Image 1 (spheres, rainbow, N blue to C red):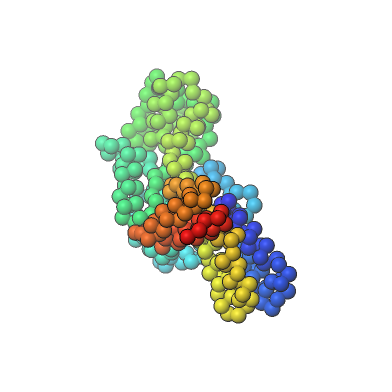
Image 2: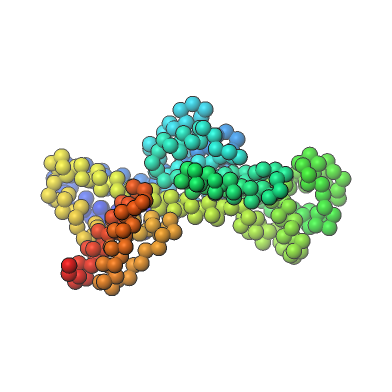
Length: 359
């Protein structure tokens, strides 16, 4: 949960807990909205059979555990051959995993939901085998093409690598291959070739790393022979692409919390216009605390997406920030980014007024 959403939720809880709200006819609806606002964010990891969704979830579970308290919940949802867009509406963030190329089923999932998304090209170390550029460079290039086409952050990943269980026995086997290279032209050749490393250990190396990451590990040991299992594990994790994937997912999750906040405000507005405590709801939706909390949610989402937000407390800086983000919201940007810009404008102007600013 982002810091901004925590502030927003605290503001909402205080409003819902007021005696005049709790005891009023229809006040239970406002209380229920406040309770649902704190539900964990639903993050689906979707993919066709065989693309490695389970490995991706395992890698994310190791590197991006849910925050303490109500955070996010990783939910595996297969992409079937028919009706691939089923169950997309109930999700707050979607991670779509594919291998090699995007299939029509993957594209259908992307098109079916407006939720923040991240595309993961898994098994990146197997991309374009035998190509002159090497698998990882080929995967990076392919991700750039899909990112330009879909306008969804697309990143390469070798999800099994962060899950690798390296020990000193594996490291010693890899060191042997530095001095006496094995045949790595294919999986079969690697297992059946004559080599001092036993075939059982070579099969384990393939299970833990596969050929390309294993080659990277051997190259690292050639450069730094003293690397032990912990250091080599950390190096391979860096090479797996998991850190960039986690950054992209965190940005999508920050957007998910922002969208949750906007959804809550829309629901409160609907409650008010139907005649349930309309004056109190309207006063809350335009209150100082609410506008500043909404701004902080937007700031968190923008910052997570790599868009810096200057947060100086000088009165004139509030006004300058409002002017800048008003231009940002005017576009061309997506509807979500336009709403973020508008919330930053409103919060900044309210802070400017509270600091003594005058039009």
